[in-house]
Every structure is written in structure tokens, then in C-alpha cells.
Image (cartoon, rainbow, N blue to C red):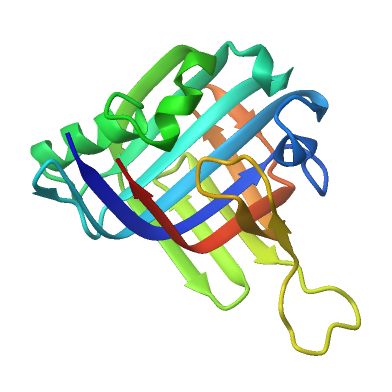
Length: 200
């Protein structure tokens, strides 16, 4: 069992700017829940000999106010260009069955809502990042550049516990329409990372 994935990442969640859950998963969310979309654009990768470069995976989760309480509801989309073999391998990695970062979150998941194929479009244009999944998910976030910062570099959040890595860029939702697997919310805050890298 070995695999490696490299790519870019975008998320938006229901918390106000900034999400307390990203500071620490045992902090309570802004509201009585945290709902989040996690979008992975795989630029390079192979899973047990299967090439998965170019594939996209989007997860959506509905969690309690305190994420570490567990009982998450989780659904997943894999892009409809994936072969059956790619679909199977990606489902295993993102479901945590093949180890890696998602396996660490496995004990928190109480209900798997399903894995479906869907048309997935993602784009990264400077500070803006957008994700569209069929008619279920459509959002855009923009990385936050602090007032007075002349170099134009966005705020980075370093030292967090997050499956994508400990150093991500803070962003704010510019548009949001999310209704997938029975989970509906307005995305308000976000994170992005231009170069996630996983191996197991």
C-alpha cells in the first residue's frame, strides 16, 4: 500500500471569518454546527500504481459545533472523468482506508452519505479560487490581503491541525450556493493552498 498526491486545495465553511475550528478542532464553531466543503485538485499522483493526475475530489461535511465530538456526516464527489479504477482508489484514499491524513479524521465520521460521480470544475486565478460541482456546489473565495500590505501577499495561517497541512491561506467567500447530500449552508470564510502534498 503506497500512494502520493500533489495538487491545490480550496475550502469554504459556514463559520464567520475566521473559523474557530481551524484554530483548533476542539473550539466551538461560530454556530451550533460547522459545515464545510473541501475541494482537492490533483495535479500529480498515483495510488497503488494507478495514475490519478488530473482528477478532482470534493467532500462535504456536517459536524457538531465542536468537531472533536465526532458524529460527522460526510459526502464525497469524484469527478466524472475518473475511470472506475481511479474512482475506486480515490474513494479509498479520501475515505481513509489507505492511511494518510484522511485516516486520522476517520474516527470522527458517524455517517457516510455516499460517494458520487459529478462534473467538477475548479479554477485558481491569483487570489480567487472557485469550485463548481454539478448543480450542488458553486462557490468562490478570495484570499485576504491585509490593509496596508504593499507586497500584495495574503494572510497565511501557520501551525494549524488540518488534513491538507499546517500552513494555509486565509480567504473570504465571494459567492456561495451549497446544497449537497442534504447539507445546505452559506459559505462565509475559506482557506486555500496552492501546493498540498500527501504520501502514505
